Every structure is written in structure tokens, then in C-alpha cells.
Image 1 (tube, rainbow, N blue to C red):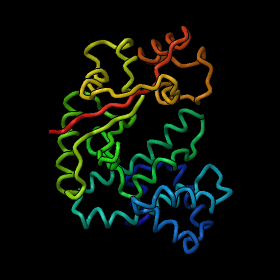
Image 2 (cartoon, rainbow, N blue to C red):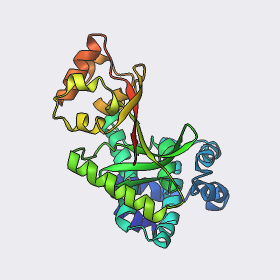
Image 3 (cartoon, rainbow, N blue to C red):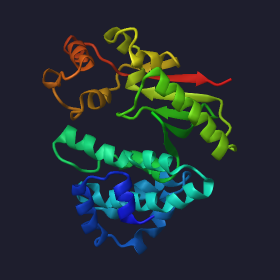
Length: 270
């Protein structure tokens, strides 16, 4: 896939495209080749990401890392085609790069790439966006599982979630029949039982939670601050926004000494 075609398909912001065009002249592809090759393989992507980060050294706003990961995304397009995976799945999966850049701008007031520690999963075909949700190859207690992730723009209506789960089952059964799994797992602030105190019974978030058996809860986790409020993690509680009902209620809870945390749940497949 041509670089410009990829950038257009995933709706990369024009500001970032301009910066990547400059970065393209700075990055020596021959020197980065060993890292990129391993970054496109699920078994070596995590290690390759760390080594590439060290190699890139001075990387203003992590634009070189973004450029390199998108080069990997270009390369695996042919693998999608060879497997017969629909281009819509490819595009929906890789749009995460644009989504993360815009979320970064909303949170920090300017656009830079702060999610390279996550997106090597997409660049190595370890994670796929299928409808409303994302699905990642994973392991739990020595057994293969599919980890479910909830994108910030996910439609969590029961109908959309059910459709996504059904399509995911068909997807992995068709394209990865060798990956035998019997469970979906999900770890997120959106799984926290505390949210049931803040939301109405008919809430889509509550309905999503109830598909899972909650196995553990972490009240000390603070990542929900960034995800729920779209602000830097260290923002003072009294300065948190109140644009939504959930933000307002969560803010009240925090100011009263409470917290949301996160939880881990599981769906057993028959």
C-alpha cells in the first residue's frame, strides 16, 4: 500500500501528515529495517518496539516512532489480503492511530504520538477492530484467550456489542482457527463495579459489564482519570471537567474521597 493511500484511509490529520513527510527524510530505513521486520511479528513486536525506541533516541513528539509503526502498517496490508481479511477490518483497526492523536490533542492541547507502547499490537496483527470492539490475542493463567478492548468511540449499545462479539467469533474461527480459545477477557475502568453506583440500570456500560463475570478489582488504578475526563493524569480533582453526567458524578465521588479504579472480567464461551 502506498504511504499516501494509508494516510488517507486512516484519516490521519493533515498536520501530522506534514510532519511525517519531513520525518521520512530523517529516518534511515536500512538501519531501522531489523526493528521493523520484528515489529510486524506478534511474537517479537513488544521487544522490537522497546529496542526501536532506544535506537531512535531523540524523537521529538515521537514522530519517528509513528512513522516507523505506520511503515509496518503498510507492510502488513499484504498479509491481510493474503489471509482474505476484509479491508474494512484493516482500516477500522488502523484508524486507532488517528484517534489516539486527536485524543492526545484534546488531553494536552497539542498533537503528538503518545501511544506507541500500545499500537505495536495493531502493527503486528496482534489486535483487530471488529465492529464496536477490539480483540487481542492473549493468555490468562496459561490458557489462550481473546482480550476485549473498548475503544473510546465504541458503540456500547447491546445490539452493537452483540454483533461485534458474533463477528469476532466468526473472524477468529475463519482466519485463525489454530488459535484455540474458550474465553473473552476484559480489563478496564469501564468494568469497575463502582460505575453501577453512578449510572442508571439501563446504562449501556452496565449492560456491557453484566456480560462478564468480574474476577478482580483494583481500586488503586488511576488510569480512568485520563480516559473518563480526557485530561492529564495529574489534574487536580476540582479542575476535572463536567461535560457529561458520568464525569460529574465521578468527580463528586473523587472529591468525597472515593475512586473508580478498574476491574477484570471474563466470558466463558460454550
